[in-house]
Image (cartoon, rainbow, N blue to C red; front, side, top):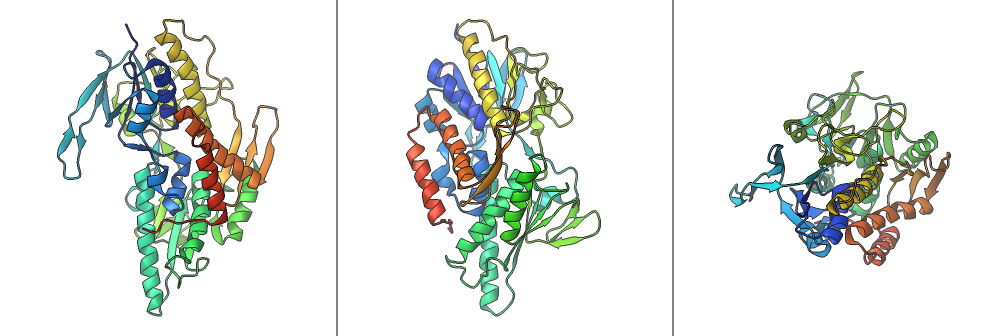
Length: 432
C-alpha cells in the first residue's frame, strides 16, 4: 500500500519538501495544501511592498509546480484535523462575492507535515492589529504597495498646489524584515521621483522612521553587521530610534512608552511573529507562542506520523535552546524530512540521526546595490563579515538555491542573475 503524504503550507520549506518528494514518489502519494494560488519567496516580500519587484513576474503557480514536480495541489486553508480518521480538513474556496467555488474537503494521510509558517504577533499593543500592515503574505505586500502609491499621488497633488507634501512611513521592528523594507523603500522613493512624482523630493518628502525596542537594530546578529546596516540606513536618510517600545497606535501616529509621538501615514509591523491561531485548534501540543512542539526528529510530540517544520515548529536544539525561525532552518528541516519520509514510503526504517540545526550565518539586503551579513556561523567556530556587492551576490544566490530546490533545475538561474544585474544598473519600480 502506498504511503499518502500530505504537506500543509507551501512556504519555502513545505514547497521544497513537496517538490522533492513529488519527483520521486508521484502525485498519488504527495499532496500540498495551501490557501494561495502562487508562491513567492518570503524574503522577497519587502521588494514587492516597495514596488521594486513585480509580484506577477516573481510568483510561481502552485498548479504549475505540481505539474512539473509530480505532486497534487489542493487549494484551500486547513481548518482542522480528524486525528482518529487521519484526515486534514480543508475549507471551501469562495469567490469575491462569497459564492462557493470548491466545497470543503477531507484529505486522508498516512504521514502529515505541517509547515504553515507564522503570522504577526502584535503583543496586545492597542491599535496594532487595526492600524498596521505586516508582510506575511504576498497580498500584504501588494496592499502596502498600493497604499503607498496612493499616498505618493496625494502628496504630489498637494505639492502641485503649493502645499507641503510629505509621506510619513513608520516601520516598527528593526529585525531583518524592517531593515530590508526601509532600505528598499528609500531606493524606491528615489526611483518614484523619476517616474511621475517629479515634485517630490525623495529624501525630504518620503520620511522613513525605523523603531526598535532593543539597543540596536538587527540585535540577534553580530554588532558589526548591525553597525554597518545602521550606518548605511542613516546615510540614506532613514531615521532610526532604538530603545523605543511602542505603546499604542492610531490611524495617524505611533506612541512609545515614554510619550513620544511619531506621525505616520502608513505603519508596518515587523516587531514579532507567532504561529497561526489554527494550530491551537488541532488537538496537538503547542507552546506559549502557539508553535507545535516537536522532538529532535521533527515529530509532533505524541504523534509519530505528524511532523512540523519552519516557523510553526518549536524544535529543540542539543544545547537546550530552540531552532530560530529562519528560512535556512526551514530549508534544512525540509531536507531532513525528505530523507525520513522517503525512507518510510519505501518501507525502510526511519533515520536514527536527529535533526541538527546548522547556522550558516545571515545576510540582510540593503537595496539592489549592497547587502551586509555574517557567513559560516558556527561551521568553523568563527564568523566572517561581508558587505557590498559580494554580500549582495550571495543574497541573490540564496534565491537561486530556492528556485533550484523547487524546480529541480537551474534553468531559472540565468534569468535570475540577469534580473539582479538589470536591477543593479537601473532599478525599476512598478507604478501601476
